[in-house]
Image (cartoon, rainbow, N blue to C red; front, side, top):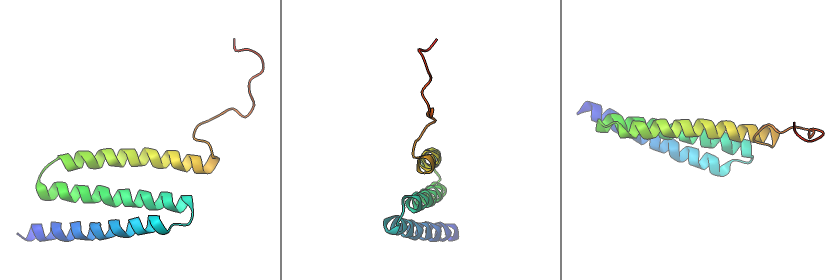
Length: 101
């Protein structure tokens, strides 16, 4: 019975933190601030899914949390690279001269 109260307190706290993170996304002034806030919100959501998995004794929320964490990691890297260079991938600065061999 006591462990259920701990899980409930943790889930409630992470739900509050998720609401704060959403407000942080809403109030961010720059794109970089929004990116950091969105990454923090996803991190809180992954933690929330982990607690739900522990409370329900099921593994599928952990699968969803792992997939969400991987997707968040890749999208954060891509968005940060785009914000830094204003282009997502390497592009040559000067075109090669002549026809390709």
